[in-house]
Image (cartoon, rainbow, N blue to C red; front, top):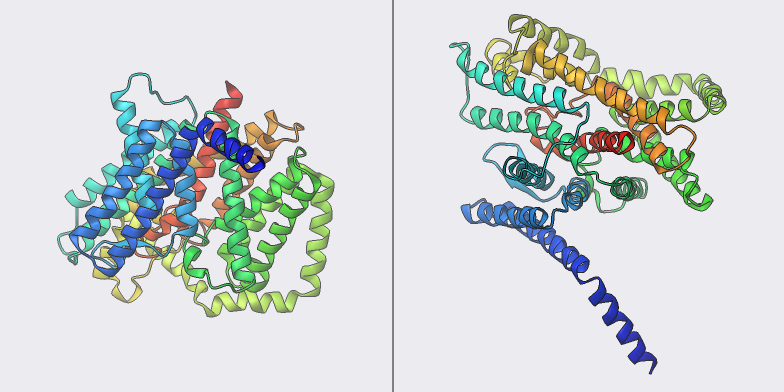
Length: 469
């Protein structure tokens, strides 16, 4: 009798949730199919493997389009960026296409198609639209101008046109991901799912690194750059601000932050791009939560630095100098000199690589700095628009923080995490191409870690619209 009742309950549950369960099965099937396609492509770089991968991704996109649940696609992009790093598709060059990029390309492409074909689908009104669309327009102009006005003496290798197109695609796609995310956040529940997804990924990565688990290949690329800042910052903000969570959950979130600090600061002290953005993000969050807490942490921090100054100096400053970081000033000067010769639109996406190889082959290295990368690729116009984008993101996050101040809920936590993360991103961009990956440094595989920044800042714009509405 009990077995019969359990059978009836299970059957009733499946029947009542059949549409939702079907979506889960189709989504899981699409992910598995994409992974299988990546595996085949890695084994055999044939037209068949390309076609199979393309079909799988298009089927996933068709599912999102027909079900109108693009929010699920955002979570899938995050999971692919964080856990499917070992499956990539070949491009015929040294760079490879990551699954998160393909998913984003299809999702954003279908969404744009829907905007153009469906009169009922419209862009929501947020301040990020104008700077993002203007920056995309300038990036396109810079690409065509770089070809039309190219120095005839430049040495151009066979793969460069493909690499330049890929670089242009990344420069355009990542800001579009932010705009796409802002337009898909119809309720706060989806922002919470996005936040818990990054916390889940942060837990996996932290445990994997600290315990030296054999899962590094799953997340190695996605966990670079600003990943620690977003996962640790989100956990910290929710622990400090979201009083709806149980004390045990908030303690666990603080434990995750401690684990991430140990991984990035203690285990990888030399890695400034890992712990510095995380530190900046947490400092901002602490400052806006409690001035007393901020003062207490500042005093503790100064005491720790004072007692371990020599060791920290050797492990951070001296180690980075030995790694060649002191040469970056020369690289930046060289890049700036090139930008002065092409001030308006720069030398196009990935363009300074061919100028370096032609005129400075002994110093042909990337700048390891997103500001100079954007300046040389899109000129002073493009850099101005790029800074405008981040100024708007910070303005939105600050406005949200003031509007939601004292509510002690998830929305307030997200607003503070977005503000801290945006400021952390400004610091990270001085240390590497972590927001717009450069084609000849991170390559386009850097999309895995860069996409988190654009998703979370786009989410802040979506929350802005909800609060304003």
